[in-house]
Length: 115
Image (cartoon, rainbow, N blue to C red; front, side, top):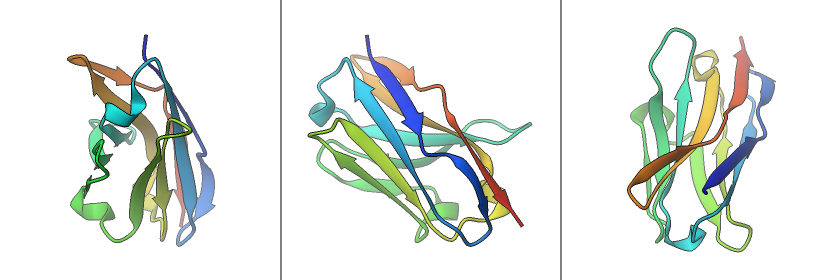
């Protein structure tokens, strides 16, 4: 069974930085594309960033130039470095992967950005 565990969320002032981590188990991590999503209160979960198994990355437009997704295939961990945070980045951030035709999600980590 695939397990994803996020960490690193917290409260930060606008303009600050946070680094989220997602530790993965139960899959061949180096073969898996990994993604970050977020969900603010009263909204649908939205895509934030993805890193493929080869290291290619993709971002939603609102975070380009501020967020960086990376992976460590030794630690089976994916990271999301978030800089220049804005109040509109406030959300629960979820780690996601699609493995053997199934989607797996972590429980999420709360990020709150104060103005």
